[in-house]
Structures are given as structure tokens and as C-alpha cells.
Length: 87
Image 1 (cartoon, rainbow, N blue to C red):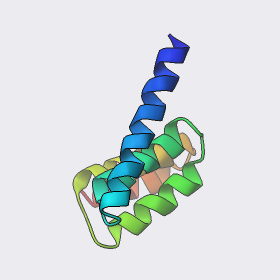
Image 2: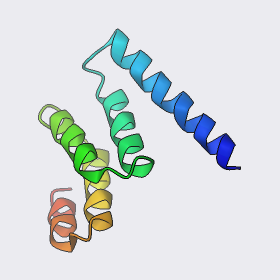
Image 3: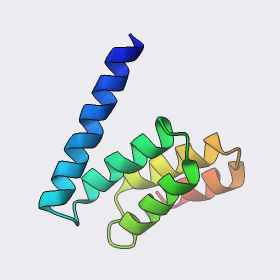
């Protein structure tokens, strides 16, 4: 099962980078990269940096939800609650 998940993740990140090669401003592809960085590389700080870059131009609710999930993972309850209030 682990090999299948790893393969799926590699395919996901490959598709995100292909989308970004075609359109460097593709917010959905950037969100995909942020998700992989957070969930698989366990690098919440970098994932938040990517999300903050996206959110400078796009304010979709799913970005706030992902930021809240990352804040929870980092043990930052206040930041999580503050993020939810923005929804």
C-alpha cells in the first residue's frame, strides 16, 4: 500500500508542476504543492509560505481551511481559530 501512495503522490506533484509550467499563476496547482509539502514532507512552515503567496491574490475558503489544518498540526490553536474566523 505504501508504494501505491508514494506513486500517487509523485504523480500528483508532477501534474502540479506541469500545470505551473503552463501557467505560473495557477493557484490550484500551487495549493497542490503546498499540500504535498505539508502532508508528505512534513514541512508546515514552507506550506504556509506557499499558501500566503497564493492568498495575496486569491481568498478562497479552501485556502483558509488548509491554513487552519496546518496551524492545528503545529499546535497553534489560537492561529487555527483566528483563521476559521476569517471564513
